[in-house]
Image 1 (spheres, one colour):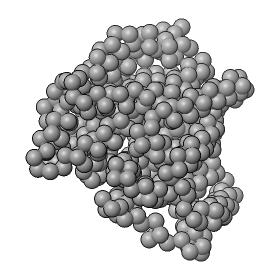
Image 2 (cartoon, helix red, strand yellow; image 1 turned 45 degrees about the vertical axis):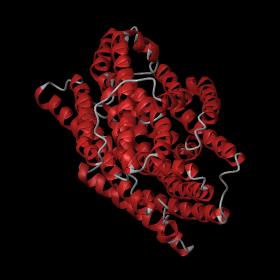
Image 3 (cartoon, helix red, strand yellow; image 1 turned 30 degrees about the horizontal axis):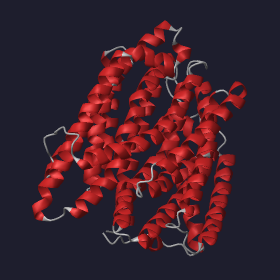
Image 4 (cartoon, helix red, strand yellow; image 1 turned 45 degrees about the horizontal axis):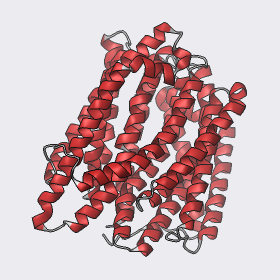
Length: 516
């Protein structure tokens, strides 16, 4: 399997999804602006998103994939196909039971949860009740997206990368449709966005079902705690849940801080985070989606050379794209926010505050992206404890930064603390991974980094020259601003690629042929 081809395909679909996500956010910003009700929606949506990252994209998949790969490799003959189906049946059964219990419990204690994650809203009855109502609408999304993620994991293992990568497009379309409906027929009611989230989760699940049937893993869920592989997945989920929870606890604490800020702060952080999530989603998530099953398989076969080659390949691509993305976001922060969001109810102040948060987030982009690769080196070895310990350290550092600078920097402090802690997290993961003596850097890394830094510096100078000649971005229609931004980004990209090519970089150098 050609990994570069798979990565390009998944990244292209993910990029399309992210562009649609920007259109979604642009429409929300234009209709609702950045104020009390958008804060309520984004805050309410954070909780199901938090649980999604723990159960769907985080702990469950990290515990499930290595166990399933190992089980599949031992039962890959025709007589054992039914055993694999039973594996999926029992795992999906336990997942559904657990998630239903979580949804029911959190629905009951929703007021208490909101008081914990946003104590600053507790004395603001008008927004407090809206957050609770939205949260209760969106909680079943946890069940839908977790099942959708289980199906995605199975499809990825069987090399159906395109289908899972496409599903977020359906979610974005759902939110766009419901946002427009709220404007046209429901007097711009933010409540309709909650139903859009729920419908989007349902569409993501239903779209993948026919493809699950194609690989003959569409099964009726069953429940049993007697199966050894079920117990193994549960045992491995424990440390993974703790690891994911630590990072999400940091997010919750940041919510607590932000709830005491002026209305709009949560929205500023959301919009800036969405911009940083573009390269993370397009590349980081795509890389981790492709690499984790292959890392697990290489270790299962004791092929340590391929394991090390995979890690080197992922890190090189990650750094080659994250460094220029980080610098580009910082330099073009104001034009980006103006071009994408400054319309309708989104004011000049909203642009300025979002720009500051974006710069702070962009500082840690390389750290945030490399974490997604480095952590897989541990999960593929079924080592969940080391990332937990490192996550605890970075949690403490994050909150120490918040305590030190929150009063002076406000919402910018919350994004800056995440960035600085991500850089620390990335370094500690790399250091601990090297100590295991399974992964080692290949020759040529120093020269590679020097070339990347020089190319990024030249690109930065070109972008600054462009901004000097185009000082104002506020004027013109939306399409004019966006086209001007696209042309500027394209020029920066061409310059970056040109400099790399002068150093002898070739696309074929990054083509990785897996033995799978």
